[in-house]
Length: 539
Image (cartoon, rainbow, N blue to C red; front, side):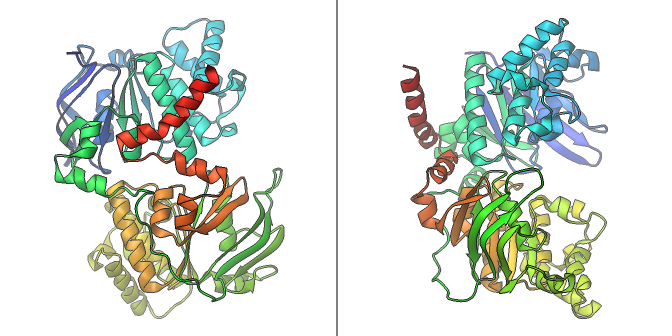
């Protein structure tokens, strides 16, 4: 049997007052992809950081981490530097934070090469061009800066950085979470190609079970710092041995499952409508180009498309943050053109907003109760006592309870913070809720509970919702209708079941086909036509 290239045996990681990882044992074989899955706080990323000696100050690691027969725990910094990058490389979730914004990408890759012994400037330049070509970036773009690349291109550059020294192991920590489905599909295809072409062992950390089905050979399931089970990917999806793994798989939204029940059409006037809308940004083509759509009372309209398609721009129009270059924008039947600040403020009182990252949208200095009462304070609704009572009522409605009112955001989990954000958005009993990627930062099980809560609140309060997301399976679950956007234009729209199962445009079909399915056999079969097309083109 092939010896593991990386062996983790009895690893425990402790922080002052808390244990993050407890007795974790994993073995990564050459040429394989081992996926580590579980909720936030399960110990996935801490385990990866412990491998490379990158734990924060105050953390202590015990047990064993052996790479190619060498014990890594306890190595000094100089010895670890000879392993990091050269033998074991790391790719983080957000490529923007991994790249230096003031240096050209070619220089950054060259510095990695120089650090690992490539002294000749010409040799470095040639190798930079070769690496960029391998990840699908034209070599001449080595002189460009990170801000000149899209999110998917930046992730490709980060992969080039990681592969610069030709490592034996790649640790990929949520490498596709921040990407749109089509870009994610490109990165997954690239990872498969690189892994097979280089005989690279990959430790993949993710909460996306579709990505696991697409890439992994084996899967380790973690919870509360422990490994609950490790199985072949097909066996795990077919017959998980632990209840937690079964719950995790059951929480994954799928396009093929029954979505939201179709509601009867309403003749009521739209709460938000745009007609032939054009929005311009200085120095570039129209951010929104002749958009016409409407959201009716009680309806959830899913807005989907890649980054830069105009989804969030349309959301900013809905709350009056952006004006129209031409066309009309109506909010609750009122044309926004020429409205004064006071009139616009009165309309905004009827809108609630839920952002993608609740940690960023909640003031870290305010308690949960203060965050929820803030909209009531701003609009001077009721008395201080009635505001507190309303906030406590909302805490009950979002299944947290009044005892959470005294907590600060840092004392809550991601799912709990998003529940607080929902309560805050509903404080003024809005007629329209703008939800901009409200679940993309959440693990699948937490996402499932938040989506279930969203459906219950929407049913109880009857608000209309503009639900912006790049996750088509989530939109399938919550939306009555879907509008598909690309490059500032509306590609198609209609009932969710029709658009996501029988799309009329090739672009929507490409979006649907790019969503990885949480089933290894089905996902591999979905990739087959692409493989056959590639073979035919090269024949």
